[in-house]
Length: 489
Image (cartoon, rainbow, N blue to C red):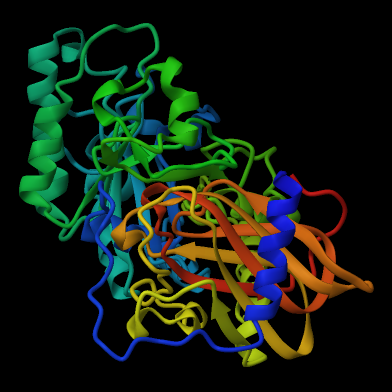
């Protein structure tokens, strides 16, 4: 029976793709939102697609990943430090937000905090008068970049850490320094690591302070409240991924939640999208033996993060000189060029493809909206109010389009909806139709890599199931990736 239904739908689409669906002349209101919804700050972050973080600090000079807190401040001395070089690299790599690790687990502060001497003020760098946070915040804004801070709640140096109340006051004081002395902050990242300690963090107090002092900042941690960690450190979200989760059920640093963070919940009560963090090198901090990942690895990470409705959080660690290493710069530029090569051209839009659909809610929600790459213009079918209603949208051009990547995007400003879809191409290798990709969720952006190039003049997206019965598709495009070789993950 299932196969019969599929063929009936495909035959109907084949016929309907040859004429335009009639549009109503009367103004039709937008479809109702499907809660929960993203905030304006969350949408802005989602549309960045990629964020760069710079892990730099005491570990850079001790060749460690996690310091133990007893390191001497005299070890920190980046003789060639140049924040302008960092900011220019971030800008040239086409990232719009840079985050600095202002204090890692070892407790060493990259700014002269008045709450501890374990900071740059006790180091020989600039005779104790340096401030990495200030230098990078200024350099970033000079390049037109937004700035964010990473601040580890776990502090292996601070004696007050054993006392929940006293340490929380200490941490809140340091947080306030960062939020009030360095201009606008776009993101605050609270790492969830706290090995061999059961001390509770007064997390709600810290978040309240961030939102009070920096109203445009998103807070990233295991449990949000604005952005969640994706549950691993290799830059990959689940092939099924929901931006929604039950935020109240999560606890920072709890390993039992990592799988849940990686997938999300279609019936989650909170909109908390994910950032997929990964380093361009083997470690988070610079190590002389490490080398940057190959271009193919970075592209695979891109598909498994940005291509699964997440934000890629790519770490690029400066070296002991205080510069981003030349080999890392070279790889970043290759990565940028590759992404531009793949996605700068939408084959359907450039072929002036006609777009038809199973139904249309009204003229403002026409199928052709999927070609303009705007999150707030989208195709909406008639409102059936049934999650099992089958909807489809068809791209057709006069000339065959050769592609190996399918891009689909939902109008997530009104909620995430799609639960099951398939993409068919017509007229490939003499066959009437072939299934080229399929999946569950779409979200902000879904990038499906095909097993090989496909050449077709007609491509159809079938949405078999969606929450609320009303899928809203903001973009449906086709691309060619010349770097795709062999079996993909």
